[in-house]
Length: 517
Image (cartoon, rainbow, N blue to C red; front, side):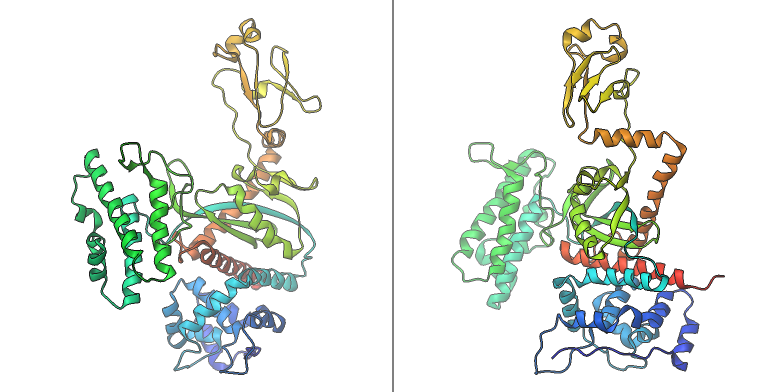
């Protein structure tokens, strides 16, 4: 059965007006009560209803608009699914927005809320929620949707919700998870199943305590690793004789992945932890998408990076993206462009940091797109920097301060002949290398030269400062989403990021409609 269009009253009742007067801080409740009919128009409600299967059986589903409002309020208040259900009967502000004043029973169950969230994700309607806030702003202020877009793009860290573990505990955790699934399937206790599989250690409170080694000794660590790997192999063999579900195989696959990425076999059948870190090293059993990454040299991130594209003229978040923490910023731009495409806007200015320079958004840009970014600093101690060399882009040549010319190409390094540099009268001011001077040409060297020219002027530096707005926008998103992910998995956390972007945009819209003081 298809959901019906939700048509709550537009005008405030005397009871609702009294509640509104008592709300002094959480003003988004008041705004959503006043504008819920603008955000969830009948056509948009039909889009939401299309995610439900049409069936003559059962009761009519809860109106999707009411559930969508609950999803947004959950992001705004930072509460759990259980607390959402409690709030619908215990918090007058929630009841005000959801049109269920004085309800003794929740208007929907936790299962209904979770199911609706899954429908939003499957149909990409969480992206549509962002678009609806943009459409509402355009309708309220008469802003042309086809105007040139001036935008800024930046990222911030988001620590994952999964537990980060070392190799020993990752292997033990994966084995324990496989045995737990099998124990539930067989209706037995985990301890009994683990004992039968020869893996009693994984059911203790600490695998490392059960191994009882002097972890400061390299030899002790090697024998502990051998014991854990032997246990994994024994459990794999034992499970081969047991009827089990695919969930058991999935958990064992995690153990196999960890063994492949973290364990080396240097010879004589021995095993040792691999030196260095695998490129796509798994760091959590429960969240396979989390990765080690760095925001800076001193700040390591175990989880994700969130990306936001901010409209510099309207202060609205146009699009967001989420990537594992080890991935370059440039990889997020494909998703950002996909989110921008339905908005039918044309980028005229893009303010970014250097991490996005290698993105398709920059490399494949149209001729009329102006990119603003701070150039990489050029240093060479007291000797000539690269800026002392002349690049002739038409001829494709590089000329040194002593007028020696060589061909170049972007992304390569130009090596001046050893003999030429040895006889150069400017050698002491240029290089100390016995092999002569070399100059690296960045793939985007021409663009970087343009950036350097701009930031050498007051007007250019003022233009660069416009990007600060997106940093403030990311700070607002982080205030509602938090620094740690709410969910396991990349897609659910992208959903969470999109809905906090909606909350940000609703605040911007509310401020724009507020009467002047």
